[in-house]
Amino acid sequence: MAEPLLSIKDLSVDFSTPGGLVHAVRQVSFDIAKGETLALVGESGSGKSVSALSVLQLLPYPVARHPGGSVLFEGEEMMGAAQDKLRAIRGNDIAIIFQEPMTSLNPLHTVEKQVNEVLFIHKGLSRDAARTRTLELLKLVGLADAEKRLSAFPHELSGGQRQRVMIAMALANEPKLLIADEPTTALDVTIQAQILELLRDLQAQFGMSMLFITHDLGIVQKMAQRVCVMNQGEIVETGPTQQIFDDPQHSYTQHLLAAEPSGAALQPAGDAPRIMHSENLKVWFPIKSGLMRRTTDHIRAVDGITVDVREGQTVGVVGESGSGKTTLGLALLRLISSDGPIEFEGKHLDVMHSKHLRPLRREMQIVFQDPYGSLSPRMSIAQIIEEGLKVHKIGDTPADRDLLIAQAMEEVGLDPASRHRYPHEFSGGQRQRVAIARAIVLKPKFIVLDEPTSALDRSVQAQIIDLLRELQAKHKLAYLFISHDLKVVRAISDQVIVMRNGKVVEQGPAAQIFDQPKEDYTKALMAAAFDLEAVGADGVIAT
Image (cartoon, rainbow, N blue to C red; front, side):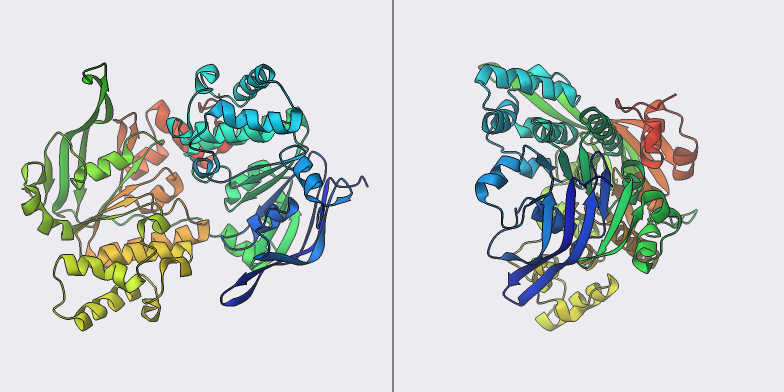
């Protein structure tokens, strides 16, 4: 047997917290052979990323400590290695692609400067040589108009483009081991397919090994030769990928494999009243140029869309980032300016003064994508849910409002006794339940759900979808469900709108859109979501 490239034996990681010692990783062991892809899977908090960061000794000391274990890379011990040795290996022999490129890239530096930095440090290249190599790398990862992108800043790139820049940085020195930590979680299905195809091609080209960290088992099946399943800091099952999928032994692995969002969308009654309606809705953002800053063109974020949402109905809105999904939802709620009629229960919101619109806001709510970002870290859960009650003068006394808060928390499956805790003390799924409780405590009739499950693990996604269906059945809620995850949309939507570049590509009953899509773009989305092999590197269905 050849010596593995990476060998981890009995790795343990402890974190010192105000509440005591947390055993984040316990006695973890696995090997990665040269040229092999090993997937580390499990829910958030299972210890996947902590294990990966331990390879390069990147955990914060002294908060994080290694009470035991060994990390051998090419036979050399990384645990306790000198900083000079670690710096020589980091970004050179071992590289990392992080989950969220927008927070991993420096917002003040251009693409060229950030990729160059890796080449300067490890290769000692001149500025001209580094520029040439950077351009080669950007073309290698399939970044369109690579030469023009050299001077671009991260905020000027799409999510897929930023992830390609991160991959270019990671591959700059042709590493022997690439650690990919949830590299496609925040990406649309077509972009995700392109990035995975790119990683496979680059792995074959460079012969590198890969540690692929994810909670998406569909990706694991396409990418990895072997799988390690983690739960609560321990590896509970390991083996060849197909064996794990065909015959999982551990109950937790079985739970993960069965955790796909499922079930059918609720059907509105035949005479269900129309809650929200808009016809030929437009949201155009002006492009100004010249000394006088005159409007020379427009970005057509939403360009002539008609929407109908009835009581008890879910209308799903799907499409890639930048297609106008979120802009559509914000326009319907009159949170941004738009052109075109918007009717809420027959009331024309588009011509209504903000003073008269405010009482209606109680009946129109929104749940955002990132619950951690949308919940104030300085407010307790009770204060967060109570805020809307105070604004709309619901509940005569603090005791009345406290009762409403407790009822809302129980409805979303949270213990009311935890209402005096703060957002950082909850998991991602629990925080999203708080965001939903904040919306439903006002007894709304219409809720815009903007990517409410995209940041969550599959098993938690399934729980949130079940919760949303239960609340819809109980309160006859009308939902506009915005997502790029078609599996989730299929599980909850009665009608579907497919958007691209601000326009409707296809619109109709969910069964028709999913089972018999008519447009090529819709077919490409479906292929990317349900069969990644069917989509080529350019996002087009393979023939």
